[in-house]
Image (cartoon, rainbow, N blue to C red; front, side, top):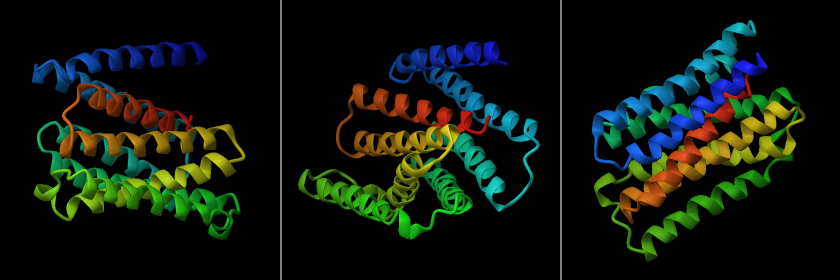
Length: 221
């Protein structure tokens, strides 16, 4: 099994390196195939771990399952429509949020013990809104959908920080780190869409997202 994951993760990294080129190479077919392969790998890994471990169906496990499945479909939809993809991602983000709350509760950690993550949430979200205003980012075509989306990803990202800090198991810390990377990647994607069309920003977004969500997926193995 250890050898399998060495090969699996090596292939995933190789595909990600190819995606850095294909994402900005102008060939939509190569980009779509490459991205679909990456997304299929993280969701397949999660499903294998989910069922191989004999996970009992509960609200917590269903939220995890829905989160990864929605992210997979959002990745595909995002290739064709940014807004529709973001809506599907928002559902996945909320599933990650609910799962994160349940994970903390399962570890007997009350929100009063991690209240500071609410400050992180507010600081990140408000700071970006101020940046949008003062840098005059072109967000108007997305309207209210943009801040709503940012709220959903900041929710699970700030809870990811709480999980990474308080988690007693290595898998929980890895999951939390994965959510943090996911959150940062989405802020980079929004920046790319409404402020600066930079290949570096886009590649940083993809790198953080695909590594982050794979870490979250591997945490269930």
